[in-house]
Length: 300
Image (cartoon, rainbow, N blue to C red; front, top):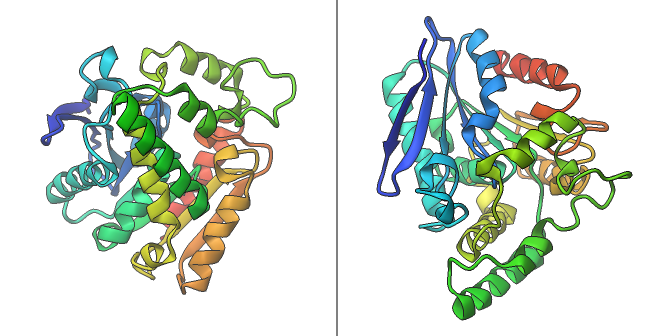
């Protein structure tokens, strides 16, 4: 069936739906920073083949939601506005398919967004896949908020701070031997890295407004009181690569998992793949990863 495309909301967010005949469920994909929903096309087609409708958007300041290159990485709202955009798409889709199980999957920045969403509206979904996530200490997120606020007041919210960018992502390649590009930390698949680097939607330094929103998000999801707001019986899959710097090479994922256990969450699964980097859907063993995700979805 043909892909559906439209814009919605006050921020004019670009969204897509990949429908199927006789669907068995819906998966909403929430992408990461400095990318866009079309990077998930291969995974989406596999979900379609398994009978799942897929929906997703380009977040504000990303992809087709940004009105021109000059607006890449410019946030026109805060973190909760991004989460509300995700929720708006969820409500539209759930109203269209009220009888189908609804799974929400978030990667990287999207993982923090879906964790925020689940703390506010977790009863609206039937499963949560948290991919490429981490646990940022509150002192770090507070410092990031302070620095971004200072830079924003001096330079403006649209300013692209190389300092903030380097402080946030600059160490991600550090553990990789024989570095080939600045984005080797994404995946061991060189062809994917090259495709990413040549993608016009993936070549920008985020603005102060975007970084401040992200710091708001990681600060929110690190607080136990907010984690505790998620439904205790919600099926949750934490899935990451062992060599993912966003998850502090597994330690951040382990920390989040232990907090969920301490808070009494009963249906949490953790899967960490040795050798894999940040984008496990684009890793050399992606077929193994995708098969695992399918099996988890059908068994919740």
